[in-house]
Image (cartoon, rainbow, N blue to C red; front, side, top):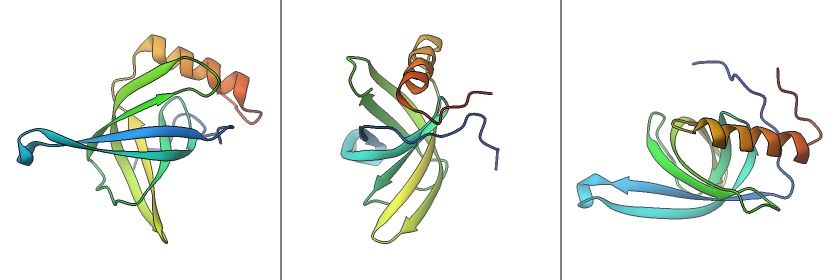
Length: 119
């Protein structure tokens, strides 16, 4: 498993995220889940879910950074999934976050968390 490149920090206020999962076997239909991110970094998010996700699964995440009008929607890859009864904690990496989006996210993390430490 690759070691995390950026530190994860708790967001305040909590970050609401929409997880979108394509179901190609159902004629490219999709399902969505509204949930909460536990923490985030420039490289990914840890969110909670009622549904288990297999590592390696590609999903789409959509969220608006708290107290801003900045919306981010990008493909994510499930890195790990652990059951912490009664919910799953799912760690994902951003797959195709653009340079501008990554900078907006970095700036948000720097100004909205006290424990942000970019190395």
